[in-house]
Image 1 (cartoon, rainbow, N blue to C red):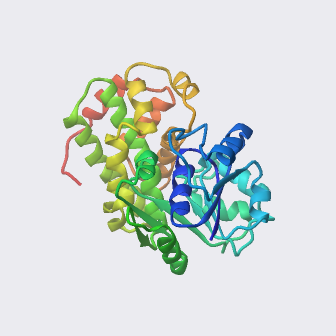
Image 2 (tube, helix red, strand yellow):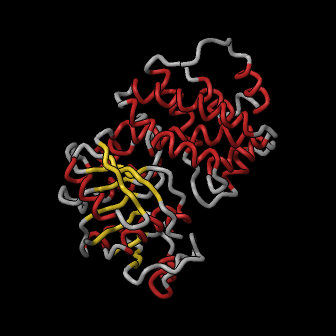
Length: 332
């Protein structure tokens, strides 16, 4: 199996490594020539996960087109959501319908409020292009360390999901299949917004009671939005929903939680973003999720307040006070 990974960031490198450890040939596509040379010459990604030696069957290329033309049976898409459509549109002539695309990217495309499987098909101009979405609680370094991990591969194409399950599963990685693409995608995207919320609370000095409240009410908001968009409620109780939410909200390696912590401590969003070398998808997702909720007639207070903080319309302390003053009612 020849796998091309679009994006040699932390998660693309980690998932590419999982495929390589299972014996597949993997090419990481990077824009950085130094990174390419480092991977090809010393088997290390000098930009991300620098402390790990990559398998011998991992190499790198500066050209996605060349890598695909040289031979490709599967594409892993690990490019930030907002840049995805442009990148894929440039490759539509070489990503033929016989090459499935598995998205590792989690978020909502701002231009039309769509999720990645729709972004992929629109960019490639093929509504039936075989696509899948990989999600679940999985920090990249723990994958590299061989920590036992559970993932979900979602696709409307059951044979494709089962194929990825076999290709990726190992003694350290359990892969479950799901036909509920929208449910898995909503969980993967929205959990980042609640991770920012948990981080903000932590940065302000709130502790576990507050985090547990945010996560629990976040589950409710996530479920409501997903079901309104056509997802199955049970999906949000699985690895791609509550599982990923818990990891991202509590884990210190979460970029989105880190953004929230720094916002809660009083830093400006622009300064936080400028200091990061990878995208925190929850930042653009917050407003997109708030817009989606409004479009289906839902009031989702945590999402709305995080979006207001991100947009600079509310300060963290003001948002927390506002949330706590919402009229009380029955739990849902």
